[in-house]
Length: 160
Image 1 (cartoon, helix red, strand yellow):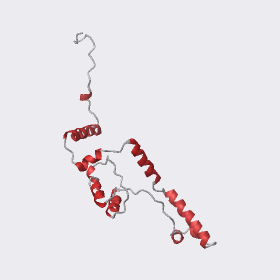
Image 2 (cartoon, helix red, strand yellow):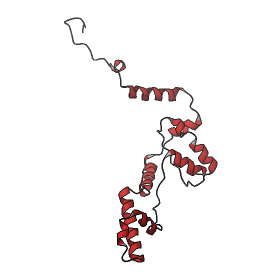
Image 3 (cartoon, rainbow, N blue to C red):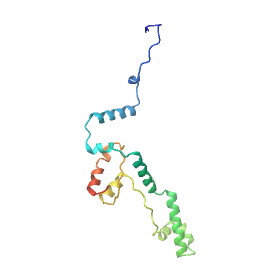
Image 4 (cartoon, helix red, strand yellow):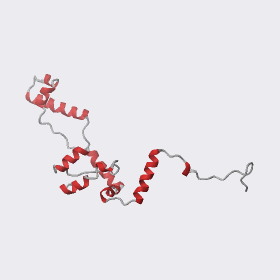
């Protein structure tokens, strides 16, 4: 087999090294190589240990159970409580349902459902006030320094 002009077909060569990959792929690959070659501090290395699939599924089911209510659900809950309050207190005060200021007067004892809190600033405030019962931290936060302090402060405050 000779490879000259007009001769045999050139053999296939792997050209992936010479491809201009998109920037996000290059950054991902460079980040992986840096993590392999550099010694990563423990505060950052703990974010590379993630939940297995079964535990993650259980966690997502639990979080789905405590999902915050939507605006429509909240409106329906408040209206139901208001109508119950109006019917119980005043039979001819049904016009008050249209007036939101008076509606608040009747709807003060409504039970707000329990739901999972979210947002970094809110969670930090809850942890510092020792009001958090559990904290779940995503492993793929970028930049990582946004949440790197959170496990230490949870440990300090006794929050699992």
